[in-house]
Image (cartoon, rainbow, N blue to C red; front, side, top):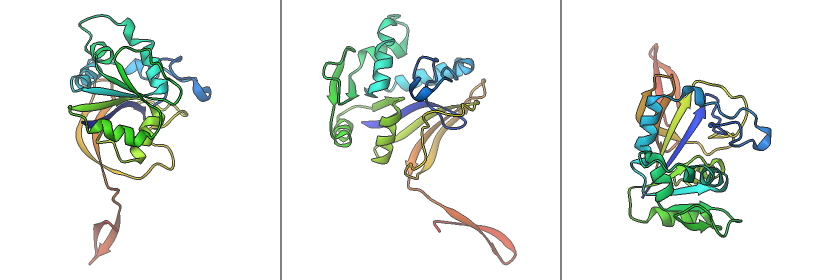
Amino acid sequence: MKLTVHTFASLDGVMQGPGSPEEDPSGGFDRGGWIVQFMDEDFGRVVDSWFARTTELLFGRTTYDLMAGYWPQVTDPDNPVAAVLNGRPKHLVSRTVTEPSWANTVSVIADDVVDGVRALKNRPGEELQVHGGWQLVQALHEAGLVDEYRIIEFPVVVGQGKRLFPDGTTASTFDVVQTEVFSSGAVYRALRPTPFTRGAFSVEDGKETTLLDV
């Protein structure tokens, strides 16, 4: 399976607590709910398209607990996101949970997360999807396991909070495979990691040129 990461980010790279003030107040974060004003038909269409490709799901503990407390309450058969989240096989990364409560949680990865996720990627299917999961996403990025990032960036600066790519993240360049500007001004990008590339400007024979891989 292809491992895909899906998240929402502010202009300053924050992914913490996008949906409500109570979602993730850890670290004293009090600015949750920053995407709500920008949710429109474009947002819903793109998010629905993500879940149309889900084979299995992978969660970190915080995101799992949050979603397990919310989505089982959504029983509307016409809600495609709820149908996938509640019905598809789920895997939880946690060292403390031994009996997960959310239906169709089929495994708990307690140790050797990288090896465990590699094994999941070797299973048949279209996509193993991660939604949110700050620490998990960082671990997967550092291990080079992410095949594609799908990020909706919103026109807001939060000023503090957990960042998608914090200081010290392994450098990477990305191929942009899809991009779209929503009516709200949010920007959607699908990005595939490639080796980090850098360049330089130079002047040759009076003309400005660019050099790559310097």
